[in-house]
Length: 384
Image (cartoon, rainbow, N blue to C red):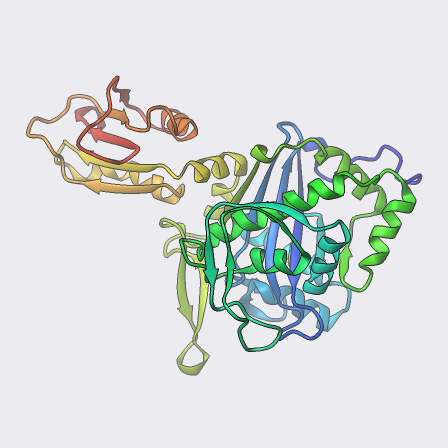
């Protein structure tokens, strides 16, 4: 702490600090070094906003000396080749996918996660909806008894929090990568709130906390950097923290199969015709992308011109992650101007702002009653 002085974190002067958070089974688990969870915590120091970017474990990436492999194996391969190098190698692999500069990492195994949560007295989490997971794995290759979480507040123990964060097969729409990202965000925020009550400016307190997890926790953050990070994030409100998953979406990120015969494997990768550079561009303003994802706006496009090519520029909305539907024009008389109808009643402001900044149209004063989409866009003659 004394040596660090008033040093800033890498990226802080540019307004963005990125840290890779890694979770893995650890000793006693099947594939102990495979990263079950990979999250980039991207902190905007200017706006005091954080985006938690979940990297699916099946995303394929080119690893040095290994060829194309799933991203969750990057840490394991590096640790087996050179113990202690896993975090840096995993961060470099995630940099390839996201285009973000990630100078820091923090990794913890399941045992350490449980200890950490129990150490702070559990975490207070509000469960959005009731769900049950009948396929939650145990430490080997079997499953636990069905686990149920009921909507409402719950003080979770470490083990309970681990299941809540890892669950992949929940009912009631809790089986998606996005739902899992939201649950992991809840755990991270709840843990942050508990840790914030500790005196991390005191070296003894900080050392005691780190010593508890010596066997289960690894990071390249120095103690003074952890202190600085705690200072920067201490006043961040939960509504300023967003989650985003690089799961298959639109025509940017797709799932697929690589290999032949018995070596075939499910992977996630850029869609056909797309590259990692397109994903880098997509994440260039990650806070905006996360805010748009949170609104989950549905957009309907009707083409009144009769010319298919005018749709080309609007298909870019799919690459941006929007849920768009292209429907036949519902009227007989073509529109002279492109009109946007806001059926959301102003409840999707970031989506409207994005559309206004990237496309030309006239906003109608009334909703479009013949559609349930949040926004209806009818392309007029001015689009020709």
